[in-house]
Image (cartoon, rainbow, N blue to C red; front, top):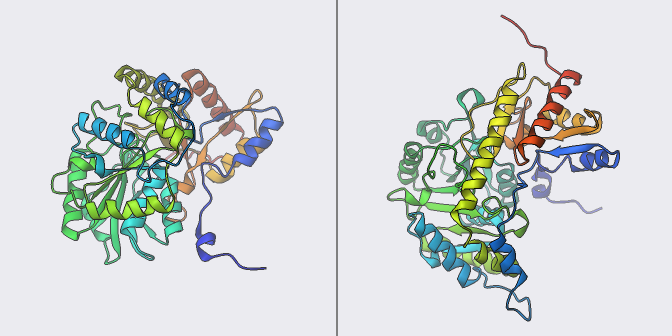
Length: 403
C-alpha cells in the first residue's frame, strides 16, 4: 500500500469538528445537543444578502474574476475607507473565506521550514494552515490567569530567529475573546520593522468589541505599509458562514501580486455568494448594533454561569463570541467526548471544543474548553445547566483542594 506524505501525517484534526461523529450518534439516540463547539451564529443573515442572491441578473453562473468581482472589491474597499482605513480597490483580493486569505498570506511570506510566531491559545486552523504549507508555528503562551493578555514585545523578540517571517495575531481573539490595545499592537509594529518581518492580522471579529469603539487595525499602524497583511471575512459579521467569502488586504504590492498568483491557481471565489455579499454591504448600521447587544448579553450569561461553578475559571471577555474557560476536569478531550457519548441531563447535553487543539505547545489546554456563545440566552442557560450537571457526574472531575 502506498504511503502518505509526512505533511498529511502532521495535519491535525480540528478540535472544533473532530467530535461530530459522537454528536451525530447522540442525536440518533434522541439527545438534544447545544452546539457551543463552533462559531456558527444563530442570528439572522441580513435581508440585503438574500435579496441580492434571489434576483441575480445572470443567465449563466460563470467564474468570477480571480481577485473577486470588481463591484465587491470596490464596495469592501469603500467600507474600509468609511472606517478610516486607507485602502484602495487594488489592495483587496476576495478569497474563499478568511481561511483562504490566511493560507494565501502565510504562503506568500513563508517557505518550507520558515516560522510564524503566534500567541496561544490560537485559532486551531492556524496550526492546520501552517502544517499544510510546511511552516512551523512558534507559540507564545498566554495565561488564563492574566485574561490571556498579549505578552510584552520582548517575549516575542526572544522567539525571533533567521527563519521567522511573520507574527500572526487575531484581534479580537478567537478563542479567548481578548482585545489587544493600540499600544500592544504598536510594540509589535516596532518589532516587525526592526526585524523586517510581517504582521498578519486576523480581524474578522472587529465588530464584536464590548469595550466600545473599533479595535485598532494593523492597517492603521504607522510605517507598516510594506509589512502588514489584514485578513477579513463576512462569515461572522453578516452571519454568513456558509457563503465562504473573505478578503486579504495589504498595501505591499509585491505581496498582493504574489497573492494574486495564488488566487489564479484556485481560479476564483464563489460567484453567487459574492453577489450576495455586494448586497450585504448595504446592511444598515442598526443591524450590527442589535447583534452586538445580543452577543454582549450572551457573554454575560456565560461569564456569570461559569464563574458560579466551583473550581471553574472564566477570564474577562472583551470581544468576539468565544470564551476559553478552565474546568475542574482531568482531560478536556475525554470530557468533551464523554458529554456526547455517556451523558445527558433531562435528555440534553452540550458540545464544546477541547482547548488542547488551540495550543501548539503539547500538554496545554487539558483542563480548558472553548465555548462559542452563538445561541440565544435561553439556550445558553440550558447549556450551562447541562455543564453543571455534567461536572457533578463526570468520573474524571478533579477534586478541589483547600489550603
